[in-house]
Image (tube, rainbow, N blue to C red):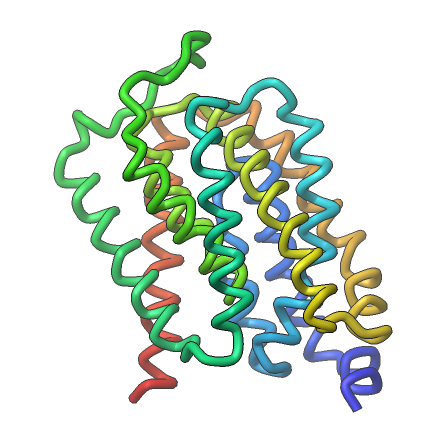
Length: 264
């Protein structure tokens, strides 16, 4: 049974603990999705739907902490259309959960992520972030782009906890400061994951065992989140942007590799 396997299998936690530390550290420190590699690692021992179900309550806890830490630092002009669009994506994910091949979805997200980093690094003078946060609203938010990336992030987050690359591709061109980038991402995924929590509950995906496993992993996530907060304060803004692109490249490559292994 899943319960005996998860509670007693040491290798499950050997993979889960470092993966979850990456997830929570990136959430607390960068507002960026190192955590997208958590699902493939944990899925070596459990099916992906069960991994996503286990991670969701843990992510909701860290989302609330990150939301408090970065309160007032998010950019509402960038969120006011993206969050409703994400709800649409979550609705589509609820309908498509048992019909869409996850491997092709991961492959598409991975290819887009790698191509985005390639294009940004070819034009570094246009990608350099600001050294200080801007107080004025972010100008020239294109509704079509906002709606597309918001819905894509919500959909891929629902299907495979892979919503971060899409949101990152939407946010990075605005050259936000460290705290604004992290705050905007924290606010977005707090809304997304709490909505997913309701959807997963309606679908009956939570069990006593998945909730117990989530509880066991939560202290690890809290540790990583607070470590991320400390690191964020010491990070140079330009370095932050380059590091963000590097993380996105790793995420994209990982998604492509794991997807092709399944497809081929």
